[in-house]
Length: 124
Image (cartoon, rainbow, N blue to C red; front, side, top):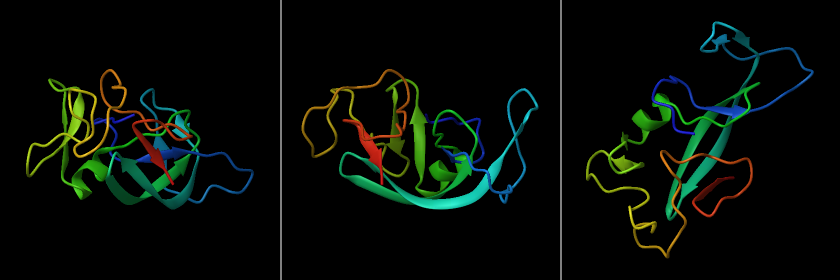
């Protein structure tokens, strides 16, 4: 999920090891256990972004503002997608096609990062 209210990008993780990441607090003020960072690549169509994601005890992967800033991406609610800030070009076009790619099923709202591969993008 792309969350412009999240300052950090997070991948779901659980561990019996001692917590080693920064202190993270959820929307309702609950502490969320964290275990440091892991570098992963996020692929949107033909665009690949490599980033250090925080590992935390969350249910869903989150692309936060740190990721959007690093890669100069903006969220466009009117287009229902993420766009390149410099060009205004969407990562996923309204037609359900990637720029330069074949047809894909559109998600409603902002893209969600699944734990497994998706027809829209995947994490490696």
